[in-house]
Image (cartoon, rainbow, N blue to C red; front, side, top):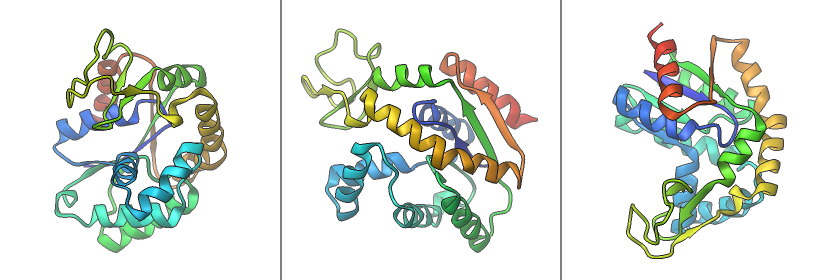
Length: 214
């Protein structure tokens, strides 16, 4: 199964994508994860992307399209994938259409996870990352902990620049102006399935699975 997971920053796309990927046995392709790893590795692309992401702005289309093309051409993507964080502009959506045609993909589903802005700001501002392994946690997950549950690094939790409230507000503004038109782009070409992103993780996932079964 091939799924494009759509929604605002902080709506829960990454969490749901990981669960779906596990249940459907297909890779979770997260452009955010790919970019953050590149930034951590200090690759040329990573350095450029880090500056842009810290402002809450979008990474240029040509970088994103190249990343996705390389990833979709890997063997594990042949039978399906969960695409998370791409496309974010109409130009990227059109480029993805061309890429799909090029590699023979004509069956995919677009799922839109929806949540109000206040909930999104609260969720993102409530996250902390480990400066050693870069894994992200909620404050509840690390309450009372001094060491990272993933890599055991001590006193490593910090608030990422792109999870600070002023940057979140900018990210949401960019999403509304640049990325919301992508939803209209797909709505005019295929069925877009909208799922309520408010609720606990299992409830949201159950809603997605139900619409996929239909």
